[in-house]
Image: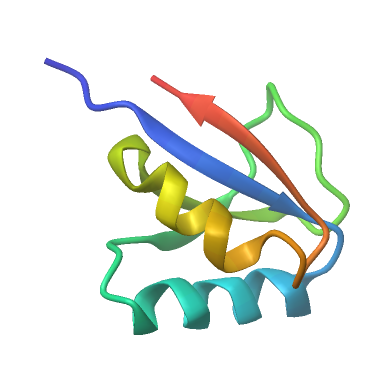
Length: 73
């Protein structure tokens, strides 16, 4: 069975690094990955996390960073 992931797209690498730090600090399993070709991003990297953590990730990042949420199979 394939796990579904959420990803966050950012306008800069600095925002991606900051988001990763915030999410990992809360114990949410996440990692920075290259943006999939099917998606677009200004900085080329995105934050991937299990979709089960979407609510927590959104609460952490919305209002702090400009972020676009997507899902991946």
